[in-house]
Amino acid sequence: MKKSLALLLLAAVCIWQYVRYDTPDQDPFLITDYSRLHPVKVEKVVAGREEEQLIGLLKEARERKLTVSIAGQRHSQGGHTYYKDGIVLDMTSFKRILSFDPAGKTIRVQAGATWKDIQDHINPYGLSVKTMQSQNIFTVGGSISVNAHGRDIRNGSLIKSVESFRLLTAEGEIKQVSREENAVWFPLVLGGYGLFGIILDVTLTLTDDEVYRTGMQQIKVEDYPQYFRQEVQSDPDIHMHMSRISVAPDHFLTDMYAINYRVDSTIPLQEQRSLSTREAWVIPTKLAFQLNRASDWGKNLFWTWQEKYFATQQGEIISRNNAMRSESAFMVYHAPGKNDLLQEYFIPLDQFPSFVKSLRTVAQEEKLNLLNITVRYVNRDEEAVLSYAKEDMFALVCLFHAPLSDDGQLRFRKGVGRIIDSVIRHRGSYYLPYAAYPGKEQFQIVYPRHREFFLQKELLDPGRLFMNDFYDQYKGE
Image (tube, rainbow, N blue to C red):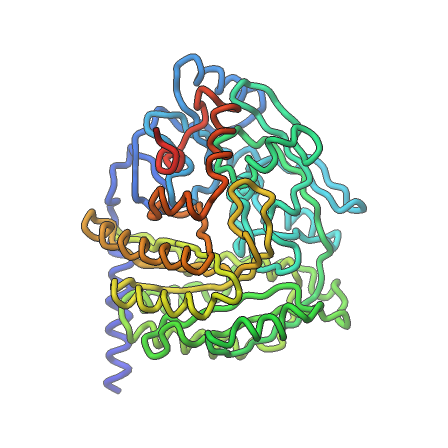
């Protein structure tokens, strides 16, 4: 009885903390991104509508000596989508499906189209995207700009499924870009964070939709690389995979569970083709995740709940399109003075147990509030100039709860800096779409082609028309 009352009381406190704020903690005339770390005043925000309008906007910016930053859903967290006193171009309304070839398995969409828009369009034809983030809310242009990756372990990062795109350059010219045509632009724009031009539309190669049967496995961190190689990577019928590491104090960064998506060709796709339209259990899961933020007890409870929940999903039948449709609405968080911030680390398979042990030490010593670690697999891919997968890697997507105060951010930056030092020692890398806690020297070590990237920026956009805070942080003068 006492335990139940304590649970209800803590839940009530968590809900109160979550909903009681009715005023923002920042000037409403400032613009920022999902991190809310560095709000700045901008000249204006312009919605992209037509190509001629965009050409005119760049002409205006050149004449007035203004900069242009390009924004989609603005879920990046490192100032990639705005710049002080510049123009922010919002591309979310630039979202038409331009052409679709079901037989050739290609689709051409404007940059503001979301992955949901594409899924809705191609699902009736039994087709699916090859690679995207684990949420379908992001724009294609934004995903191209960060060279995204996801749960698919066979198709690599997003650059592999891009056939071509059209780019509006700083000079107001529209270029058709592919691996054969205007090829110098291709590995720069893919993972180029909007610094080389406005992506107008993208042609993507597609794959077949298919039916999966899910399976779950509980494992220890030290056993994960061998398990992945022997049980997952070597099984050609497993096309998607993800895992999570426990952040619960009772098994802090020692226990894991993995979820595999194995093709089940005995079940007709027609029986699983309807797309899910809403995420289940959002409210109770949001409450549980708030408990996870609030206390060690809540973290233990949330981990136990997760393990039990996914254990009950053993053998679940799901289409590829639905497996790639999760929106994770329960993790959306807004509260003054603090935020949930992502960092992501790519670690070679053989270095995984040692790195997680190091991460555990740093997190405990720096008192970092880790809320979740999702692990994905990324194939080696060095095509993009700012490539993050220099060899086959495990991607550790780490969600931290952190204060936004100056003192709190100073402490948090110190902890992240120590983690990046460990990443470097383990031959790893880190993902650039998130808050720029890593220092300039760390960036240069992890991304050895940085000189080529910034040199090409100066050659192709000498007036620095396209700018963002990411450029200032890592190039500067």
